[in-house]
Image 1 (tube, rainbow, N blue to C red):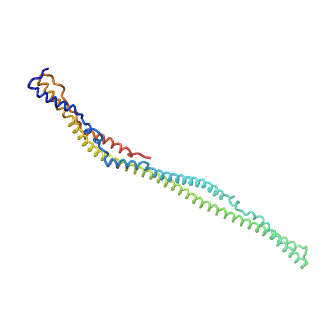
Image 2 (image 1 turned 90 degrees about the horizontal axis):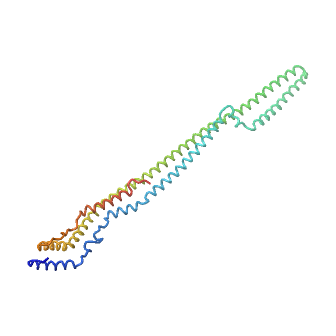
Image 3 (image 1 turned 90 degrees about the vertical axis):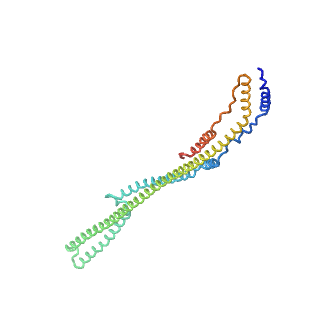
Length: 318
């Protein structure tokens, strides 16, 4: 296709411009590279540092809870031992009651004491019998009825006194044994009360250790949840700031890219115009790359990262 005379100079000018533009390489460094990526906001850095510090922060509370649990188990074991001791004390107390409760407390030497006392009593009564015989001899009634009557009365009185003395010693031993049995029963009852009180104290102590264990878990949860809220807040605010900075950098990048490709778009439109004037069919119009909302894109990515901060410690229990 021949170029009209009136367009020759214009086409030559276009050819010079196109040659100059397309022969020069595009410096992509002006609109590409990490200089257009927004760095981490200081609040994001603080949130990450806080999250790192929080790793394992539950350990002291867990150790305290384990210590309380061990102490509580020991107190429960002591309470179980005390309960077993209560049964033994009850059995001992039961043995101190009833008609035969006095028997274990009878003196093992009581029979020897009674025998010795009665032997001395018998010896003392023999002297009385001799006195009666001596008196009968002196009065000339030895072997007579009066002597027999006096001897019979004396022996009857001696037998009665001997029985009374024996009964008295038996009663005294029984009374002492019964008193000892009663005292033992009282002592067992007091010991039962003391042991039962110790049992209740141990149970209460075990409950206190259990409460302490739950409190340690609660403190751990509270601390980690509070830390999670701080991390979430710092991460979210930092992400918003980062999104703003990324939007500015992206806008600068788009401006630099648009400036780099502007000559090509201008020459394309220039060439299409010349083609149309010369009667040819114009080529496809040059179109700039579609420009999206840099802040919306950056904010969407940043808030997604911020959401990760909120999930690190939110609602987790150890």
